[in-house]
Length: 313
Length: 260
Image (cartoon, rainbow over all chains, first blue to last red; front, side, top):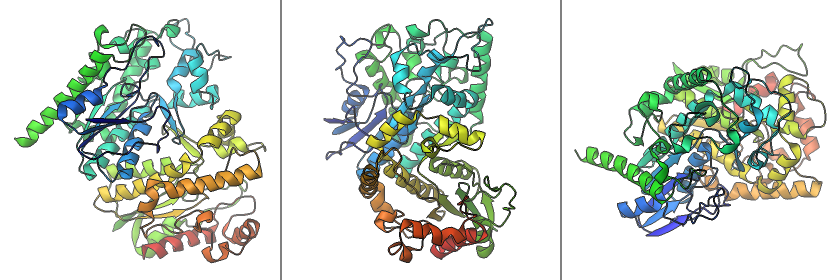
């Protein structure tokens, strides 16, 4: 089986070509990246097989094309898939997508901005425990990652936009899933979806009670603890917006989305919540390790089998 | 009666008002209305001032999911507008303007980018804009196909590209050439190149394409400034380049030309 993957520095159109034979196309973020290295634990060897390779081998594909890129946004995941298939004359036999968090913005295919990281530097808790909804004064980024990812934006102006409109993120996310599904259906390519990193923006959702190891906050966010009441209210708003999106009912009828509708309150799940400590790189780096990738592959296998069996009945 | 869905930016907005000329009555018929009347269609006009190409596509996608449409006409806008998660469309040309922006909306658009860092990104990666632009046209076409083959027609309203981020005229020329090359290299170019539903294809002046306001025959023989003067008759004024009543009729005529 041949494995071809996106270069870590590849632009959206700078993609590998499909070799001859049956091909599995895998797309996603760092959870999918064939060349993933742990920035937190650089001493750990991360050259273990990633889920696309495991899955491709189990399904007997001749090739695995892995377009996973660290820091990828959902918008870019959709567009890379489409670009790749168009550029390679539909020579793909199956698509597996591991979607990422909604807090990443694709800036014209030039850069994917992980703006979620800005919240570690923007908010300060009030006496009640809720984050201030207005900018409290001077922004003091606590980590170099924020400075790096947000350097093209004025942090304050940008966060003003997302802070007041964040509820729209979920509709956008469902639209991306719908569009990729529609694209693959039109091109007669079977497609399977899974949510990797939780979709819901962590600054609103997971502090301080993580639903799994991957949901826990990094050390530099320890000072930030919104009140339980505030978190529950925001979470409800998010879930309502999810169910009200016009794409929800369409996706709800599909059987090719593992863990649908992704959120535990709606009896859904994402792969992060399936991880235990044995599935992640380390306590500090919650990316999947070798076992974690095996777990992801097995869950994809589960849904592929379910759909294959039901189509034969 | 059949329904025409019209999408675009301020050039399509049915409720357009002129910022430089707030006293002016701009209630003349916009191109969707003119096209609809001539072809006998009900018109749904989703044109929105400040819309980005991403916003234009997604507006159509969201509408079509639960509404029946018989024809789509898109008047595409500048590639210099960024859709921030459907929350705001930021026109980053303002970031490169020295003059003071006139209203709050423009102020935000001027200030949201760190101009130096963003210029650097553009200088190295601006060619990505070409593929992105063509991809939207392709995607809207596909959207029509996915939905019982709804016919889709395209025109470029505002010029799609300007080499923002260039520090010198020579660099600007290089960026233009790089952009045109990326345009030709895009996997979507060869697909769209075979189509007949795009007015002025291949849209770029450098490739002898045109936008609604250009006379393709005149393009070759006039300078940019001469063209600007010639096209003033289609615009509100020399301060507001949005189409006046005549300009809107011209857009409508261009659409009817390719529809027929």
